[in-house]
Structures are given as structure tokens and as C-alpha cells.
Length: 486
Image (cartoon, rainbow, N blue to C red; front, side, top):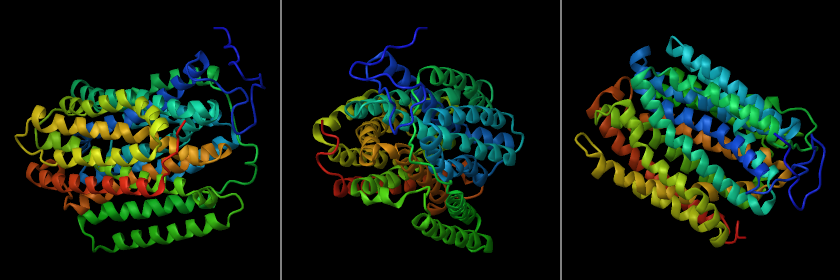
């Protein structure tokens, strides 16, 4: 294949540019732009497919490996813990050594550890490999958005992010159904094993077609101390929340909680004093950046709880097979996939504030409606309509929220900004999966008891709806009406 021509209006640059943006930005709608989108969409889609498919596979994993509710929580939380703890470091590595380079390393790491997950023989082995898989996710996830931010000119970014959200949603569309099919037809192990061929395609496309970029100002030592404190803070709090399900008064729960809180304080102090911090406090001086990330935290916490509870409710209470439960998740993802790019364009006309406020409220209405699902409920009358409503809300929200976070940060901090937002989202999901079962009174093998789990599901959906409403209120209070307007 011949090399792509330089886009009109740009000048040729070196193969390995050293600026905060690529020396030859690509235009949306051109062949180079399509290659960049393909690489980033496939990579983020691989991670998204894995996450959504694992949710559907949880009951089968529990039955095969003899795992209780805590084991299933750690199957999700082990991955998310590593991802949330190290994603800032992943963004900083990309800014320093090259976003494409670190992105490719992350894709390869993710594929190798996915094979390890598929071969695990015990719950402990699976959780350990999920933690290592999260390290790969921490390298590839911020790189995906940072590559878009640094490869496209400013005027193309909102639409590019909208397309990234929409096309990446195809993985969310395929993930639950494919995961359920693999669980029923072959084994839950293939949920992880399918990542390898996708990773090969991503690496080939990225190496050949994605322009390199980095931040030349990132030259100091890595903030490894900050990374350790951040990981310890999340690990301590997460362990305490999950362990509290089997007895909140036990000493190990309070010790873990104390370690997590103290490590969190140490992390904040470290980041304020470090010469080149992993989480630069200066980025939070921008009100919109802070507000958008706060909205991200509560919204993605709600979405994490929704995803965890709904697939188990469908299988444990309504008696769906894994394939049927996966198929039931498709409608909301179809709506998200079809409307995300339009939402990005809408935000350029109305500004980001309106869709970032209305989107969470519409999703909250869908979850309140969904809370009525119980034994004997019909898919067509009780599951499908609220799922479609929730999908509309998500479509309004996701692309404008992501674009606002990146727009509020300077270009040379694209990797850090993407890392911060992803870390916030993953930490929220991590804490939601850890805390919600305890908050609604579930523990042990309650996930396999229809009566116990259904009661907890109803309460969890109400809590998630309330979190979404808070996210919309935060966006209304902190995002300007003209943000993202063309």
C-alpha cells in the first residue's frame, strides 16, 4: 500500500515528531483520518468488548470456579483497580515516549494477559491475571483518546470523538451478545481468548498509519511515589468495601479502610509537592475540567452499578441464558452507537452544557423504569423500553462529556487529560461495584438467590438513578453554554 498524501493545508514533518500534536495533523473524512480512527476504535473497542462480555459471563465463572459474590466482584474490580491506579501513569508515558508507541505496547500487553485470563484454573489465578490485564488497559486506554486529540485539528475533534464513541459502541453492541454466545456454546474462557486476533489488527494498523506525537516538556523523573500512593488508596478502599459484605465490623475491613484513606491523603500531598506530578494539580484550576470530571465520577459510578446488576438480574431472577442476557443489553447500545456522532455534532451547535445535563437525567429515568423488573417480567414490556430510554440518555452525554474534558486541557497535556478522565471513570466504576452490593444488603451467594438479588437490584437502580441526576446537576453548574460551539 502506498503512503497516504499529506493532508491539504499541512506541511510534511519527520516520521517521529516531538510536538504535543502530530507534525502533520490528519483531517476527518480523509484516508489517513480513517486509519487513525480504525486503530483507536478497535483498541478501545477490544477493551470495551472484554468488559461488557465479562459481565455476562460472571454467573458461569462463579459456577465453574466455585466463586462467591466477593470473587465475582474481584473479577471485575481487579482489572478496574489496576486500570484506575495506573491510567494516569499510562497517559504520562505516552506524552513522554510517544503516544503511539505506548499505545501499541498496551495493546500487546492486554492481548497476552487476556490469554492468561482464559487459561486460569482458580478464582485467584483469574483475579491475578485480570489485575495484569488492567495494566495493559492503563497503557492503551488513554493513548486511544490522546492520539485522536493530537492527530486531528481542533475543529475536527468533537466529531472525531463522536465517531470514536459511536464506532466503539459497536464493541459494546457485540460484546454482551458475543460473550453470552461464547459462554453458552463453548466456555466463558473464550470471552478472553478472542482478544488476541483483534490485537494483531490494531498493532498492524497503528504501526503503519498512526502518526506519532509526544510532549517535549515531559522530561523529568516519573512520579512513581505518586503512582504507589494512588494504587494503595484505591486498593485499600476497594478491599474494605468488598470485605464489608461479609461483616463490616471485622478488623481487616477497618484496617484496609484506614490504609486507603491515609494513602489517599499521602497521594494528594505528594502531587502538590512533586516537581513533575503524575496528576498535575494545575489541570484542576480550570472549572470546566474539574466539573466535567466530577460529573464523570458520579455518572460512571452509576453506569458501573447498572451493568453489574442488570446482567445478573436477567440470569438469576428472570432465568435468561448468558446469550439471552447479552442480547438484552443490545438495544441501549444500538441507540448509543447510532446517535453518538450526532450528539457530538449537536454539542457544536448548542454547546456542551445542554446535552451533558439532559443526558444523565434521561438515563436516570430509564433506570428508575428498569427498577420495576422482577421475576416474571417481560422483555418487550419491562426490559426493552427503559433500555432504549437509557440508551438515548447515554448517546446525548458520552461524546460531549469526553470532548469537554479534552477541550478544557491544553494540547500538550492531552495524555494527562485523557488519563485523568479515564482514571476518574474507572475509579467510579470500581467503587460502585465494590460498594453497591454492600449498600443494598447483598453478600456471599446472594447473587444466586432470586428473591434476595431482586430486592437488591431494585434499590441499586434507584441509587444509580440518583447518581445520574447529580451528574447532570454538576454539569449544569460548571460547564459553559458555549463550550464546544463551532
